[in-house]
Image 1 (cartoon, rainbow over the protein chains, first blue to last red):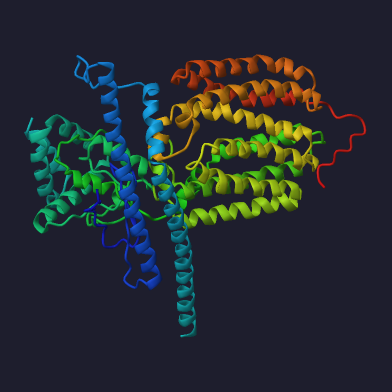
Image 2 (spheres, rainbow over the protein chains, first blue to last red):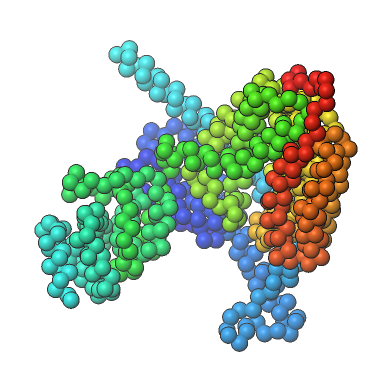
Length: 155
Length: 443
């Protein structure tokens, strides 16, 4: 489930690039730009974002695939219990309506509650850390630019 | 048939391009002669199609290079080649950041493949699958540069701040202001309007900031700006701060401290209580209902400077309205909530969900009767509001009994027109100010 992107941005670009939603996790992967003179703070930020992206990707891809799998199993077991065929005469897969699926939705949600709690805490911490570092990096860049301007005007 | 495309292209194009186009034509004709002919007919009709052949040239030079060098060179600008499938053309159309009108004489043939300028889209039908566009190229074309363009910023910020929801919130505040027993003061009203609007924008932006991976996984929310990387989290938070600080300041010092405090409290309640609570407990719905009830309270306190019974009645009306509105909406989203990990009554306690919706429909009837008793409106109001109140209660009952998608949708759509009509009727039946009423707008 680890996403290996074959995307390679054009050499002239000095920004990050964002891709289409992943088919399992629905998250849009980001290809991070590494500048030539990347500072240690910028590197830390990039690595944090990369790691967060990978963790989120893994979690949600797994979550969605598990959901689909368990949904199928639930439908199959319910249909069998009803004594119905899994496929109608037309060859289409038989499904249950929303009211019948309600039991599955409730069960799935409560089963995954603790996982979500952990994921939420982790995500909030990381999101705040990333934003905080982005702020620091922005200030660092502004400071560098000002110093460069000072040097130029003094020269 | 085979002769005319060749003749046509050699007339239109330079010799340099001819080789690439020849290659293109051979492949196209193998796969879809009719469509290619159609495209070339369009070449004659429109100058702008000259662009297509330029891109054609670039595309095929790139592709030939790739096949020699085994290198992937995706196009940076989100412009379709004529040989993309129509589906991705539509997709690219919606995702174009910046468009520039074409001026064919100014175009140079020596344009490099990787230039970032956008070009006008050609609305003619394109060849579908005529050239075997590899899936990797199609996927590559969906990659967007995360560069914020100033032109897009207003639209992005509007979506980030949920501008339509903000408009609804501000209108409930205005209703509270108008219904308050105080002379209508325009400057105060405008300050309240703007202050509440800014506070709502800030709260909505922070909400989206917190929910990025969850929003990606729900159909309703997957096109939000942070999800799609159109704006960075830092910018979103900065925008929220730039709305919250002036908004609350405006309310506190331009209107009165009570209104400012309510505004600040509401931002906190929405972002730090409701948003995380959505994934922890079904209590989030009740907290969310309080969040919806506070704006009319703010309108009232802005006009009168105090929280009295009438204010709480208005707040209570908005509070009760949230339940039939939201519970009915959530009935159709159960799958997304379950998969996404949202704790909603409709998933965990479906009976409670419908019972609460019905209960609050009936509460609305009771509160419209309380309105004249509390001197907010005249006794005409509960009488003329009775038909719509009975109707929503009937739909609430049907939802409670039938518990299906049809009844939930009917209740939801009814709630959308019920509230504005209800507030309008209240306004028309507002109790006229008594003689010597000294209700001052500001403290």
